[in-house]
Length: 303
View 1: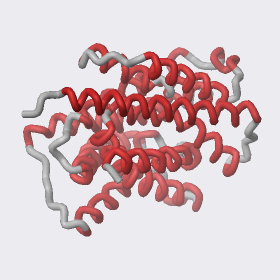
View 2: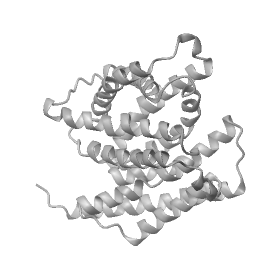
View 3: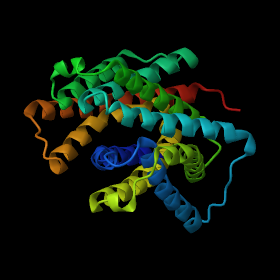
View 4: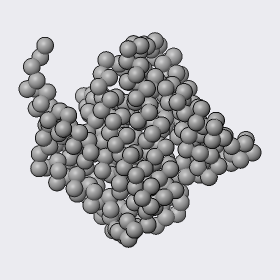
């Protein structure tokens, strides 16, 4: 099994686990601010990462000259992205927010075109267009929700899209570090950035934590900020920013599934059809992007 194949499998697992995150995040945000939620889940995630470094005897550290890049990764990929996403829930329906976040791959392709002069082919563009259509169907196909959002919600949502792309490209450039060292360092930076903001906004009293909220925080710390962060970094290193970004279009499918199971939300046949479209078109785009990347790598002169 190649590294790229492993990365694809792990990214599929990650999308499934991240689809559940909206459930515990929604519970936790009833009693705490977005910054407090980020701080708590990344503290748990860092513990997981440090245990993995101890078990694997990984003592690698980063070079001080690369520290600004790690700080930028934390700002764009964690602090700004999740603050915008969580805050946008106060202004936009979750369905509309998910549709907007589905534009992450489109922005990634645009960045590749402008910065690296890489042209996507027609198959990729058509596939992403079908992904967007599928996302709309998964949300429910009711475009009237477009009228429910406030302007600040749209600003926050699109800031999240651009922040996630900035994180993807910066992290993908740090190829000299192993995934565990990279993810642990980013989590340390994130905690240091979040702590003052979280303390300023106030942390909930212990009596406010219900078993559901505590369990949700543990889940997000383990599988979102901990193992999930490690998988995301590994995927960025092995697949590149654009291919990894395409997996974000699968999130509405897993989110709709867990919403039906845990929040007792209904799933219509229209949503099922949308999910099939998202999965099928996403597979085509990922396969085509991988083929183009391999051809480009083969044509790159070796030093």
